[in-house]
Image (cartoon, rainbow, N blue to C red; front, side):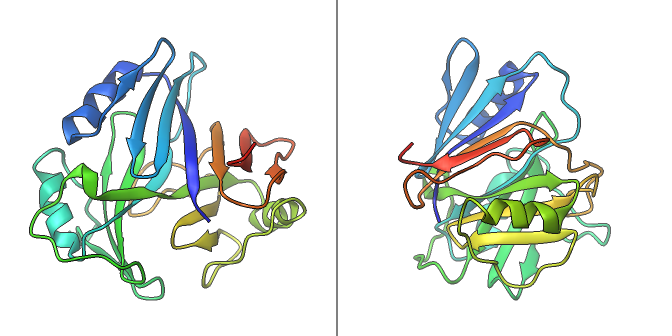
Length: 225
C-alpha cells in the first residue's frame, strides 16, 4: 500500500509553512492550503477556520540505515520528543523499525522511521531528500474493531503484525492506517489526544475502492479516483 496524497487540516497555515520550510522541505503556499512533497507522497495542510482539538500523528519512511543520523539532524532544527525515561530513539522489534519524533506548531506528532525491511544504503548525514514517503497516518476511532470491520466492507487491507482493541494497524511497510481508540494519547508519552479530525487519503489499491463511514471525518480513496 502506498499513500500518494494526504490532506490534514490546520488553523495555523503560516506557522506550518515556516516550520516545514525550516526543516528543508519545499513548501508551496496557495490561498487556502500549503503543499509539501515528501518523497512520493504529497502532504497538504488545508486551512480550516473551525477550531481543531488534538493533533495528527503521521510517519515518514526515510532511506537512512541509522536512525541516530536522522535524530541528530532533527535535533539541530527543533526539539525532539523524549519518553518519560529520556529515550529519544524508539525501537519496534516486531516491526523491524526504529523511529524518532517531534511536534510541529499544531502539536501534530511527526515521526521519522527507519524500516530494516526496506532496502537502504549507508549514509553519514540526512537531508529531507532522503524521505521516501509518508507511510503512516493515525485515525482516531470511537470503536476500533467496529471501524476495522466497516473499513473492510469497502477496502481490502491486511493486518500489520499484532493488534488490540485500542491499537490496530493495517497495511504494510509502505503505507499504514493506525486505528486508535479516541481519546487515547498519542505515542510516545505525549499529552496530545487522538481526536476525530478531518483526513483525506489517496492510496494505491484496486480502482474504485473508497471508504467513508458515517460519523467520521475521513475520506480514503484509490489514487486513481
